[in-house]
Length: 114
Length: 112
Image (cartoon, rainbow over all chains, first blue to last red; front, side):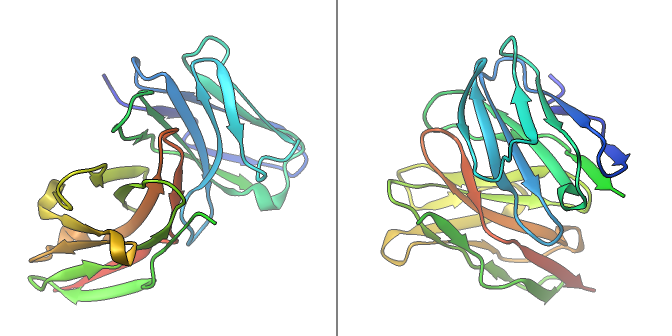
């Protein structure tokens, strides 16, 4: 098991373009989370899935953002019509849906919108 | 409102000195508490966690933390800091869904 994997690690895009990030969780984990972290801040929750169901979305997740987990395994996070304010580190985490369990984080995808 | 406060944005300690990083939380239900460490450009690594039971928890790399319900605190400690401990440290609170609320982080600098 190689842990939570995120691709790409870095993405530079022009304002207005669409971008998509991928997260592969730890294989037996049925919960998957997306967070956004801007410079000098702690991670902020965006959304989470249990299996393929998206159970909660933050108000931070504007309608330009969409996340999917179609088969309850990997997940994608798409940002449409990117803005400079979208520049951040996007972190994915996974966990088991049981009590007393912790989330394991990936290395993150660093997005820069120019 | 649910929140985590880390009052110290930056802390500098000498190598070999003791360390305490402060964390206060506000959470409506029974909290699960965590400390994570992040090196520049990297993801988060779990140092330790508290779910229930003994309020003094041991973690990796010689870190420990104490849960004090009366003070809504979960401070992180290490008796002797090593240069490799320089990083950013995040306190987080969560519940049964696993969703985490993070503090702003404390940047630790270690002087030789």
